[in-house]
Length: 354
Image 1 (tube, rainbow, N blue to C red):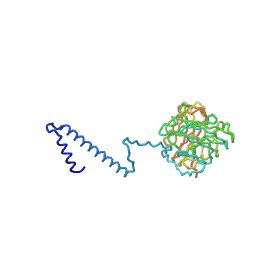
Image 2 (cartoon, rainbow, N blue to C red; image 1 turned 120 degrees about the vertical axis):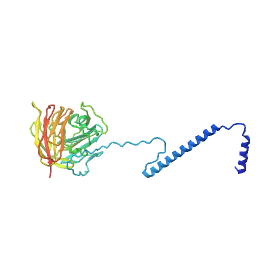
Image 3 (cartoon, one colour; image 1 turned 90 degrees about the horizontal axis):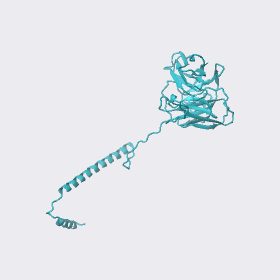
Image 4 (spheres, helix red, strand yellow; image 1 turned 135 degrees about the vertical axis):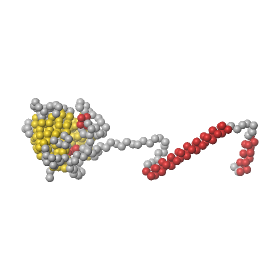
């Protein structure tokens, strides 16, 4: 439209205005106010968008292309939670070709002379077929319920071979990155194992009533190791055998002293060994051959330790390992408390190998 045409168009509109009719001032003012508000709101939104774009450039955060609220993704729970320092010496453990590793938890191919035959780690009940190449074996199970300080009283992992309970172990609240270091007592009973013949192994986490337990972040594992050299602990009936050499935090320890005693009698059973002077050691202890709930206490170590455990029906339920940092020499005492159980109480001390 040319300038002359625009002038004629405005003149024609002016001729159509009836000067006798009053102008709608209130309506005009309201529309002017609405226009100003829209301009202010548009300016604020534009400024916010500019700031978000600048922030994205500076921080690397992408700018959302829609007005929906952003949500922060929750990171998955870590499978391995480092336990608090126990002031025990450590040494690096080199990976081996035949190690079994899941989510940062590793069953070593060889631990203190014991060789791995088979292993499984899972967040649900484990079941697999195993073909023994040697029937002189050691079963090493673990269970972790992270973030629960009372994990040992909450659940336990039960290992079965062909449906028969072999061992039970209380759960921990932090993952052990090297569960193969936690060995089990050697059982002297016919498990029906034959070299080359298939056997079914199952591992399930249960509560105190024997019912399957489910918990967020739960992790369990089961492994079979060909036994290294072991030593029997008296008395000669229903006796316990323990490895001569053990590993903890990558360091090697040897069996220093051990004692066992039957729990039958009118009084609570109690056994004692003199601890080494100013060197770290491992205390390995428990009740062998008992399927009853038991309360135990370890004294003579920093702070002492107490254990309340309700096992599933089976032998060798309740084997514990307590690392003890260097301290003055003194007696290490292991005893029953609160209730008596049938079986055999045992205590062994492992000292570092030079």
